[in-house]
Image (cartoon, rainbow, N blue to C red; front, side, top):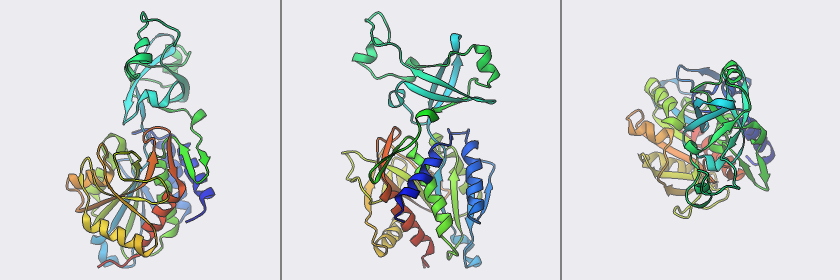
Length: 350
């Protein structure tokens, strides 16, 4: 897969669809339409997962089904309280930090309409008499020190359906991705770029040896809720999670077009046999891959395996700068994930 322009456009469409954990309706509608247009069976389950099934050539091998997951939810905030003069307080939803977003437009997904506001930290021209002075000198800003300015009355916010529990995400006003040569820069590449890989696989994988489930999983950022439900209800022999992989000096991972196969993360080890099969496919397809163990990280696959829902799990990822922020990834690594998984799905494994 070498058409970076089309891949960029596909990711851009997904990025622009708001999907904070537990409020994923906007992207659900789009994915149902896209999978249906590609001619694959697709449904929405009770846990809000979008599941596309590509039937295998050997129905008697149902017990050897493969699942590939990419979570469709994004990090953000959740409204805690609504104060006077249209000021809204939020707390984190998933691994979000206010200093990463910076002051700027955010969207509050009210029950009746979306309200745009400004994430605020307070003025800079202040002395030690103002509480935000410490943010300039000593400590990073926390959600407890930030607020969203809407300039609406409490009654107007209430009429829009903004309430405790309303989700906040980075505003569409500043969500558009940017192209940096062969890289894409954007909020929510974690994990919208992986969902783009699922759509590409739905288009490319035809008549695999065994059933392949492509799962756009729900609520991963708050505990892999969707993947745990799916693997509890649907038996699969192997689960491969698609993810971002953090670029950091502490890990032997290089930026570029080489995907990463994880051996271990914060939830435990991955299956060595399954990883070996992925490496074999990569070698046969002339796709260079990197191997890493990382911490402070978990995936649908490692969490599902830890809780005994699947016997074999793996995580295939693309190297990413600024994870859980304004992320940057090489489009070639994302494209190579498609090619590697297509090869894996079509292989006749013993």
